[in-house]
Image (cartoon, rainbow, N blue to C red):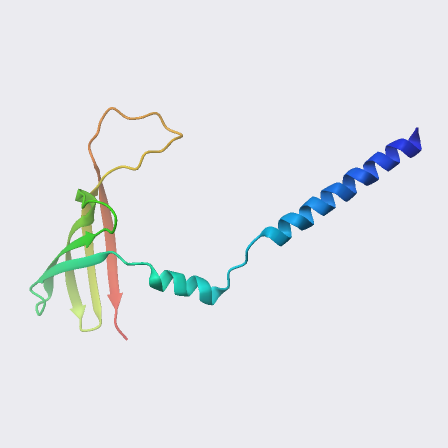
Length: 126
């Protein structure tokens, strides 16, 4: 009886080891250079912008991100302002209205308003 249990455990262990090695061999590996090349070949969304009062201390930015493969939405439009402290330091903020992403773990909300999105920005030039 003990020998039969021992034999069954050994066969199960061997089968699991064989299936694990087969899975490891079937996985494809991607090198870092291949991943970077694929990222370069992916079309980036076009970004258009308008900057008002570029030479002064205060400035306004209006940006439009043009997505690839879908229509433009309210979340693709962004407005911001900045204050230039000196030639190398600019502090600003931008805001946009985005559509909420559906979370499958939450119950759908009845209020369909878009939530505001705020982005703070600091640019250092060296």
